[in-house]
Amino acid sequence: MTCRLCLKDRELCDSHIVPEFLYKALYSKEKHQFVQLSGPPRVRKWQKGFKEKMLCRDCEVKLNKWETYAANVLFGGTEIGLERMQDAIIVRAVDYTKFKLFQLSVIWRAGVSRLQQFANVNLGPHEEKLRYMIETNDPGAPADYGCLVIFTPSHFDLTSQMMMLPQETKFDGHRCYMFLMAGLSWVFFVSNHSRHLPYKDKLFLSIDGVLPVMIENSASKIFFEKTAAEWKKSGNLDKALKKV
Ligand SMILES: [Zn+2]
Image (cartoon, rainbow, N blue to C red; front, top):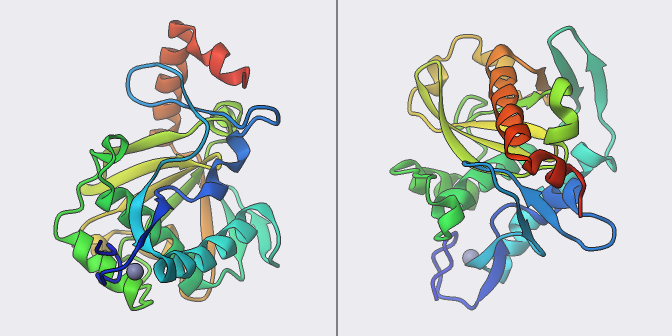
């Protein structure tokens, strides 16, 4: 079968769509289950993350290196600098190429996935552009498929325990896909015009390794307030937070 990344005819692995380490915070100690909150309120539990035959062994290994690096940045294991500002946590000394390629690989995998859970991610012509960037180890410019990372402290008890299927959203007129992973919101800009974003230099991981993690803005706050309220009403929030 054809590997979706290198396009060679190879034996394919059961590839994770969302890297396994991002489920880490969600696994309960005893049962290795996690909950997922998405769309209409309901609790879903899976033993494992979503997988499908997508990549050959070589491409798996390639993506895995970036994932390991990103896991070390997020959960410890590589030396980074942290500075708390009023509206952001500034992470310094991040390897731009590795972390950006990791981010690109997440949105690309969600786009090429044939699983119904990712059906709402439609990359159109961006799919091939992203594939080529990933295959040739080209992280592009910071605003090229830039990813805005948002931390929502007011709802961290909720966000740190849930996974959300990607949702399409708009940010300043640009098409974005928002993921909730590892307690953080990841907003991927899938747009031809993202280089024209105002304040783009302050939004995304920069070439010199500065990753701004925005502290909840009004949009993310409204989104989580709405989600939390819907879940409370349905009774599923308590169920989800129990980590059964
Ligand atoms: Zn391959």
